[in-house]
Image (cartoon, rainbow, N blue to C red):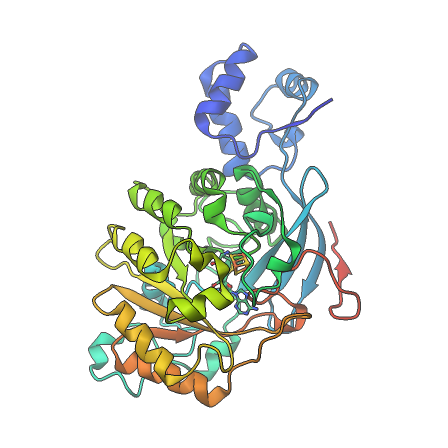
Length: 419
Ligand code: SAH
Ligand code: SF4
């Protein structure tokens, strides 16, 4: 019999499904609470429903349908990478970064800024402060050695972490520097599969959000849609997942979606009443370079993308983040930094510099550390808040662009998850 996943259904659909079984709307509400607040893994756990109804649901083929963590790899820095199995046997990767920074710092999210105000934590990303002329401008925190170790803050009321989730199995966009591109596109994820990665990870980490299930104290969770796939080529499921994730108690202000630049989807996104923060993978300072590393630029060039981004009505404290992967000798020179400054002038922009992570079969060079520092400083001098992203989980290939479904034996050590 075909199974039907309840996880991922919004209130309206649950109500319809319950009505079809002759049930009152409050039953749908109970299922909703169980799925998204308690994060049950099985129908048996929905104890608010009478046993007979649970049996009925089962007989009709309903399951909770959370994706399952089937393998884990743990980095020395605390990052954990999961291989997550979907219903049809396809797998995606999801990353848990205790302490944060899968890009939510300096990602245009107020969340990161607020957090500093609240807990006085130094930022995970390293910001060069010396060249910021007015210190009052610098509310983003500075670098500190302790930033390297503030993985999981517990004991003072909450712990925080960032979860990086996938939106597709593989990716069709074909960026030349990205390992996921090598997979090609296999299929889109459903909204339940996208949000379900978060539920599976939170259950594994026993994280409680609000009054939901879990043993830890209330937690600060940031989400970044920066795993495998291009969320804006799976737009409806991505937006559906945002609604499900909100039902799970994660506000959209703590979510950041990253796109390679799918212009029509950016325009749609601008119209959404409820939307996460946006990060655009700029990655080059002019169309010639961008086309050579991101062929999608032929369809939508930088000017078109920036126009679309400008159409987004930003909140008072909201910024758009521009991600910029530094590729040695390709886009990391002072002339490129100058071009970036010109492109972003007048915009409420932040820049997230990412030192390129190498991968097998990908022919780029990492940038020289001096070039990274000069690039960073030039942007700061141009008054663009700039962060250089601290690479997480490099030893387990969990860092940006390293999420590749197949696991090369010998490259990473994978342990069977205790599930
Ligand atoms: N498809 C979306 C989101 C996933 S990729 C996008 O491209 O924006 C998330 C980020 O990782 C993007 O900014 C991308 O440019 C970056 N990235 C991809 N491969 C990388 C690599 N090998 N090293 C560093 N960053 C990489
Ligand atoms: Fe796809 Fe993003 Fe990788 Fe480009 S960088 S191939 S859009 S996952």
